[in-house]
Image (cartoon, rainbow, N blue to C red; front, side, top):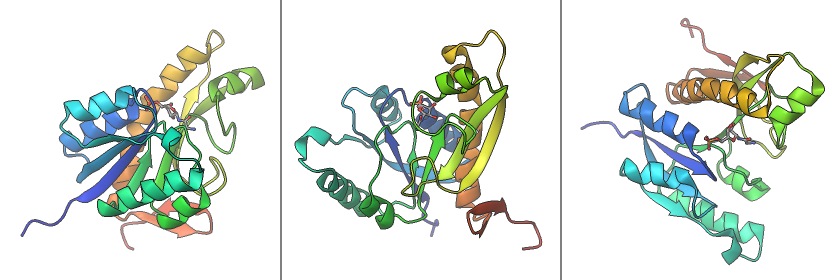
Length: 208
Ligand code: GAR
């Protein structure tokens, strides 16, 4: 009997280039996984079209149909539980997740963020990096906890900031690295290669 594939859910709100990087990594057999669900909180997110193009199940869950955030997330939890998801990947999902959701999938939610955390959490981070005058920025894949962009760091990539950069050029350079390290981090999780010590995440050595 073939073994069950590792099941991913990808949560999106927009363009979906990180979703595309995950899809491509699966199709190239770099990731031994399948995307069981793509969930968007935005109706016309281009990410949904990308998913459909690859024959993947997509769903738009309308936050306006729920009076409380908790009810919306309860619905999300139920939907994801019916799919027996192993890992939830936030890929440009622009909603803060609440305690109940995070507890329901404890240790099974990861996010990609376009800065070297803990520098510049939150929104408009390329502008913030340029304003601050840092010479390097980058991106971070991290576990999601209740602190926004505050969970344990899995992988980071460093990107230089050039004197003539604006937010767009910096964002583009960071995005190239996001598309590399997000699939890498997912692969480390699938292959059970991570070790945990407090909030420090390292890669298991071969002897382990
Ligand atoms: C990416 O740059 C991602 O790091 C960022 O949104 C963009 C989504 O692009 N996420 C955050 O800022 C989360 N705090 P994509 O839709 O093309 O993957």
